[in-house]
Image 1 (cartoon, rainbow, N blue to C red):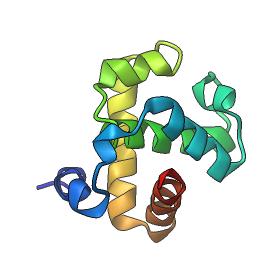
Image 2 (tube, rainbow, N blue to C red; image 1 turned 45 degrees about the vertical axis):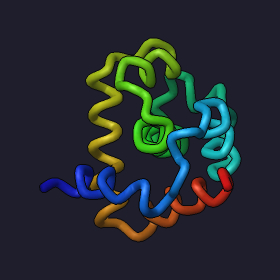
Image 3 (cartoon, helix red, strand yellow; image 1 turned 45 degrees about the horizontal axis):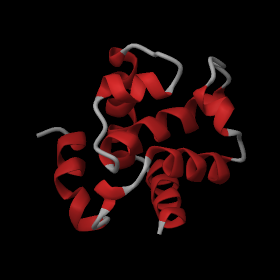
Length: 113
């Protein structure tokens, strides 16, 4: 079992009711936490300061809002579903292995409460 699969399986235990979160609310919380704009998150910039928050936003949209990869890609300027899949897998692994990434995910989820 991969770390992402385990994280998704336990998600409802950690954040009950997360499936009701709306995408704009999640995007706003990520933007506030990282000090970037929602437009930056949705934009094409490849700057490190924007890419990491964008990937976390994609991960949270998948895990908490239960959106499909194509739906998430559409929210981010028509990105391909495979780009979203890559971001979700990358962040899922980092949340399981990296305390700073797990803390960022937890902090954003705290903002959503």
